Length: 371
Image (cartoon, rainbow, N blue to C red; front, top):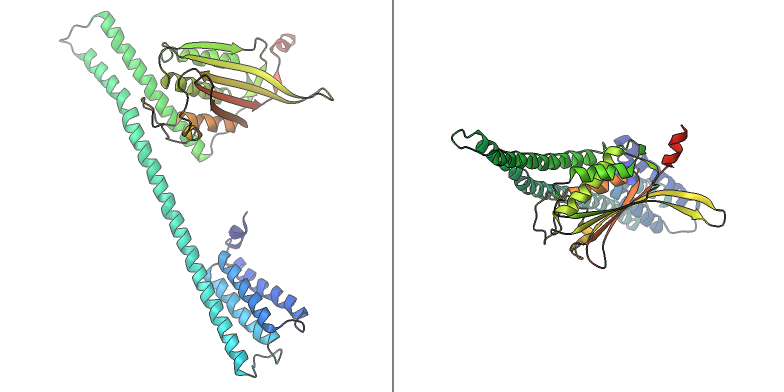
């Protein structure tokens, strides 16, 4: 909890803080009253009022200003322990102190209100911009598969038009592809909603990463039919404690992203390995890691935009294909939900490289035979 949030917890706390702050400063200065001029005490109390004005509401600050003026008069302006003032100069200085403290409190409070108003306005503007971007993306990404589905269904329902079996199969295939694309976009929206609301909680269990990779790539056969997929997976890859569903979505989004944003004929390479950080002096395993790398030999990311690859709804300026710009941001969220990290860079020979790293518990597959 920040200092400002603590001060704002309730109004009673604020008044108490005002009173105690003035009290402690006054007591401290009282011990050295004979060694310092009362004007210095006035400056310290004025500084205190200024600091309180940064954190507290206006009424507690006004209370601090009034208490400061009374403490200055009662404890530090002769005659002591009375509100009586002997000369006009001290009376004028006390009045000026009180006026300056009040003006300072009011102006600081107004400045804080202006800052809050500006922050709210900027937040609303940012939210509206994000909302409009999302609508622009969805208006295309959802309309296209819906139009394909409706068009194919309309053609199939036309009784006066004779369609060959091959033509019917093609139309049904178009419906299936459009439905899969529509389902993918809806899933991404739901996943982003879950991430934004903080409802994502990884359910860790023993997972066969090799199985997840092959299953996902089988689901993406149609999307990757014009690409070549190379697998470089350790033969003795152990089981890892990960969230099976989240890992499926991570691999799916990354492979799908490679297939959609690279030319035909590009090779997509998927690596998975087990690694251990070792203390070579003691030969003790420190950290067990699951490392997955997905790369392609396409064009890679624009160097000046690569840092925005994981931003929500961001689409690269040079991108010719559509997309909502959610896939990679969801990947990052799902990786971090499992306490993992994801890094991205362009390969020297061309193409994009995604590296996922998870610190995990592992279980050798051959050990299961003994159960």
